[in-house]
Every structure is written in C-alpha cells, then in structure tokens.
Length: 638
Image 1 (tube, rainbow, N blue to C red):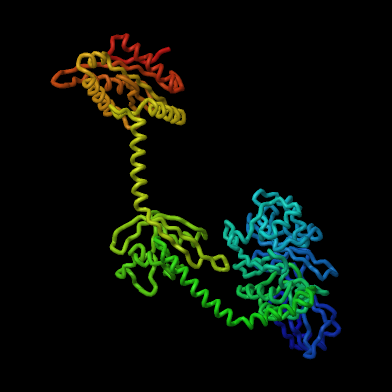
Image 2: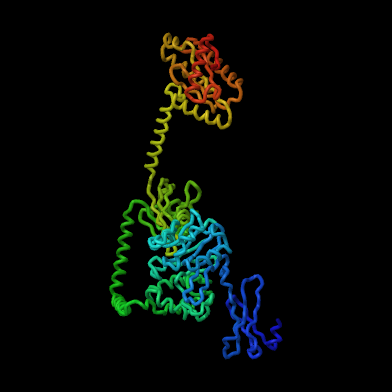
C-alpha cells in the first residue's frame, strides 16, 4: 500500500509502542476511507484506522486492537490471561508468570472467567507447572475459582501466596493447598530457578491484609485493586486520561485519603515500568508518575460518615497544638536511649551493633575494652574484626565463619563459636549470637552481636569428654590385656558379617585356648599367669591385621575375627603363625616357660550366619584340636 501517494507524500507515522497512536497528516484525502487494515505477521494483532476522532490539527488516530481470545504477553514471560466481558466496566484481570515448573498464577478470578483462564494458561504452559497462586485479597472476584484450579493443577507442593490476615477468610472457599504467608517470609519469594518477587503490604486498601507484588526483573507491579478503574469503554492499555476511570473506582473502594496516600508513598519508591492491576487497564511507565500524583489528591472513602472529615481536621489541629509536647517526648526519648545505653554497658558480655560494611555503630563498655588501637585503621569507624580478632580482614572459613555474612544470607539469628582476643592479647573462646536488624523491605541492614565467654565451660567440657572416652574405653576393653571385651567383640563380628554379606566374602572365627594354662597359675602364681596373657595378647595383635579383631573373653580364652577371607589357605597361614608365636619361650623371674595352644575355626557363612553360632562352632572345633593332642588347629565339621 503506497500511503505516500494517497496523502500527497505528507504521511507522518510515529510508531513507538503497541498502544501508541500513529498520526497521519492531511485528513481531507482520507475522508472516503472507512478502515485500513494492516496485518502484523507473527503477532496475533490487528491494526486498523478509525476516522472517528479528529482534532483541530487534522490528525487521525490509529488504534491497535489486541486479540483478547489469546494470552497476551505484557512483559517478558508475563502474560495477561483474563477475559474481555462486553458491557462490563468491572473487568477482572488474572496474570501468569511463566517460570518453568515453578510458574506463578496471580489473582485467578471467579468462575465467570474460569474456562477462558484455563484455556489461555494452557497456551503458555501446562497447568501442572504452576507452583504458586498469589491472592492479593480475599474477595470472590479474585479467589472463587481457586478450588477448581487446584484440582486441575494437582500438585502436592502447590502453595497459595497471601497474607496471614487473609488465610482465615480464604479457607472458606474450601481450598486445599498450603499457605505461603508473605508477612512471615520477609515479604519476598525466591524460586529455585531464580525468579524473585517482592511484596509490599497495603493495609486497608482495601482489606487489612492487602498487599501488592513486584517483579524486579521486568519492573512489573501487580497492584491488585490499587490503580484499578471503572470504564464504560474498556481499553487494554491505559491512555493519558486513565485517571478519570481510576478516580471513580478508588473514591468508592479506598477507605480514606490518608490511608491511600500511605500506600502510594510506599509504591512510588519502586522502579516501575508497568502496572498490572486486577481491574481497569494496564498502565505503562510514561503515565505512572502523573497518575500517582493525581491519586494523592483524590478524596476517598465516599461511604464514610461525613463526620469523618471533621474528626480528621480535629486530629490535625491537635497535632499542631502538640508540638511542644512532641519536643518533650523527644527529650524523654533521648534520656531513655541514654538509660538503655547504661543498661547495655552494665552487661558483662560484649555487645556490638555491626553494619553491613563491618563498621560498628554501637558497642557497650565490655566490647570497648577489647579495642587495641594498634589494630584499628579508622578510629572513628572501627571494624568488628579489628576489635574482636585484632585482624585486618573479616572472619572466614569453617572454623570461624563470619556472623554478619551468615545472618545476611539466612536472615535469622545464628550462633557460632570464635576465638577472640582480649586487649592484652590473651585468647578466649566465645559463643557469638548474631540477630538481624531488618529494614521495611525485609533486608538486613545491621546485626546485634553478643559475645559470651565460654572458655572455662569449654575446658570443662573437654575434660568431661576425655573422661567419658576413657570410661567408655575401659567398659569395652579388658583391664589386663587392653583387648576388646566379649560385648565389643560380638558387635565387631556382627559388623564383619554384614560387610562380608554385601561384598560376598567370608569371615573366619578363631577360638584360641592356651594349653595347660592352669598349671602356670598353680605353680608360679597368678602374677606370672597375667604376664603370659599380656604377652600372648601382644603377639596376637602383632600377627593380625588392623581390620581384624582379637578379644579376650575370659581366663585363657581368646577369639579372633578374621575379615575378607578369600580362601581357606589364607587362614591356615595365619593360624600357623599364631600357634608358632605361642610356642616361643618366655622368661619370667628367671624361669623359662613353654606353652602351646589349641585353635578351633568356624567360617561364615559355611558354618553359620549368626554370631553366637559361629563362636560356639569355633569353640567345639577347639576341643577337637585338644583331642588331637593339642598344639594344633581344627576346622569345624558338622
């Protein structure tokens, strides 16, 4: 289409955005044309020219019409999935943030739009990919369809994101999902794949637990009722006169100018590119600042008793009259602050308020006593690590993690143990308790750190632990030989059997009895017998591997667990060494002693799979070895 020839080469077209009007000069040449359609390839949009409104400058406006039967992407991965209801000035708008299997459905609406919402959602993502449903308030035009949506999503981990003040009302819709209460989660939500949402509470606009959602990546504000509009002729994107539609809505639905202005002041602190309200039109950046300014001057709460304004004026007058009283209160507050400082100074434990850059903004006398001027780079702004660690860099590593870093990441109180230095350089163990101080956005701006000296406690604990280890060792080891007792032996045998079962190995159990040991006790005394037992224990341990276990289970009886047995020849070689070691002569008090041993052998799993059975069979085999003349070994044979 050669528009240049049609308009005598005086076409002026300015295309900036979806909703920006094009201007075409010289209207007279176009009066016979009703509509001009331009099909935008790849976009489900129709652009047409309507010659209805002409201003005195002979400009003609081109309007861009969207296909409302489809989901419309209003920002990267953010979709309008609402319905256009003809002749309904109260349009309701649900939105969808496509975020993989953690997608977010916002203000899904009532059953009037249910079928359209589900169909449009499915053009963007599967319903099962929705993990979060944000409900900004509890009204049915926003919540009524949630129970049916829950059934279609069918996820055990589906969460309803709302304020705790509204959960008591939303449950009456018979919802089944768990709640993610924004006021109990630092007013933010971060998904596993990185999507971040921030929440601002907007109390009484128009319910006690009302809030709005902000997506920082696209700078989109999902504003719920705020910035909504009532429009006889609905436009998808707001135009510059949108305040006229918003005015009627807010004058009726906002409770009062002061409450509404409180919310507007919070919102205008955000960097907003797009406002997506529940009602009315979507508002782009260029109209937002002026719209907020206009709304600040709007009288709200039309249904409030007329006495309200008079009462408000009375309050203002009272405030003006109380300036002197406020000054007195300010002075009293300073005195109270000084009192609290004196209280903190009276605490024996060092206390510091530490900013995010590690500088100390407040400390008590106990903390000030730690300061060694040699380690302070800036005496007006000392760092926490300079004061407590006499160091020039922050704490790090597993041994001394930085409490400030931990609290900033976790946003909750943490406790760690550190080594601190006194002013004289003496080291002490301290338990640090660090509590976050949060700003209105839920971000950590400082921590309160308390250090409690646990040096004596730690030393006592170490002594008690050492005594317990010694007591446990004595309870499980033979006093005479230092070998494991019967109880410990059976425990290790059980573990060896489990290991052998997993790795398809065998385990040998040796039952060792010293031949004619009683004769030594009777002729040379028990002291000599004890020396013999200690010597045997030493010789057995020297021959066996560390993975094996030798135990004295009573008198002159020893048992051995031999692990990872591959073939019978392996254990025969070990048994031969044990028998030979016993026969080596000993000299006790100048008297030469010769002794032999008899050894019985059972094999897991050939001779049994239970510990008691294996020991009994090895014991039986030992008696067979004695019957063969002693000084030998015998394998159990059923």
